[in-house]
Length: 311
Image (cartoon, rainbow, N blue to C red; front, side):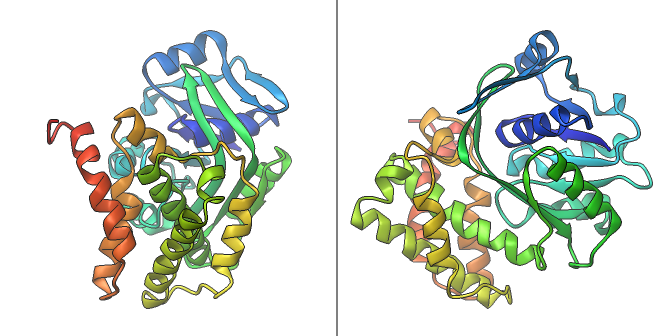
């Protein structure tokens, strides 16, 4: 398959590298010093097993230079999804489809609003990966998966082709029976993990060990479960216990991009994570006091990063 990675950050770069290493025709969309480093030295992935270098790596900052894309895997930040949909128009052919990997539950509808529902699959991923320097991505190991599927949950040839490409690359990949449910399960995880980590400034190994913050994680998840059910999303009672088992297996030093960006003073995905919980909850008249607190507490830092307040 001709696969375009639109946004070569931690997740997009990591999974794109696995696909390229397995022999898929992968093009990386990047920019600035990150792009220059990829062009000069290749895309370097560091993980517990060592270092992998994709060199030469097809890369560009101009989507119009890329033709005949079978699939575009979207790895930009959540607030960039709508703009990315407009920018990728030159790459969209009759059979091209887009798979967003953003954390959150709104990216598929945002893409569909620009490109049409028939061009979009649902998608999500799990990886503790982040850019450490231009052209370099570090993966902490442990969690690592991709889930994808048609928005109406029908089985399709295109989703199966992409599933096979990921499987061939060694990525744990699945086409779940209900992609919307899968998106909300991930949403439940990241909004608790990211939000609690950001307000406590602590890695997951500490958060899950201290009884009070462990309980905070569980209560944040319970709020998302209530919102999901009010919105007719099928999530089971076991989802919180299952998610805590997953959290207990993460690298103790693990943090989310939300937490890292808050601490680094960068714009974050707060609106698509805890902000989205509060917004989606209001639409169905559900109270989410913990997510309200997390969102409101982090909002001044978000506004400062976007030059809307100064302190």
